[in-house]
Length: 94
Image (tube, rainbow, N blue to C red; front, side, top):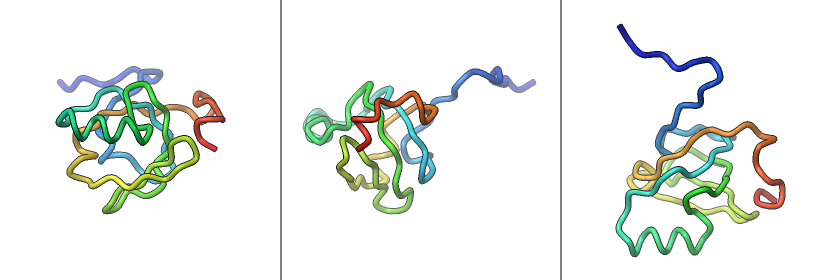
């Protein structure tokens, strides 16, 4: 028997699995410290809300009004949870 999530339970996945237009929150980053630090400097860090703008190569996210391209090989190491549009602070997405 497969385990199924409750209707109100949010399933986490990798950023690589996200779709264009999806709003998500970063849950964890499994990358080398230098790459993680570089992404954090650009605004991609644990707890941050961002919108996926493009899900092809490179994957493009919008954080703090800035669009950032991330190679899919890196995006596969960033775990996110989908967020409803109203859950993200508007200032972070402008």
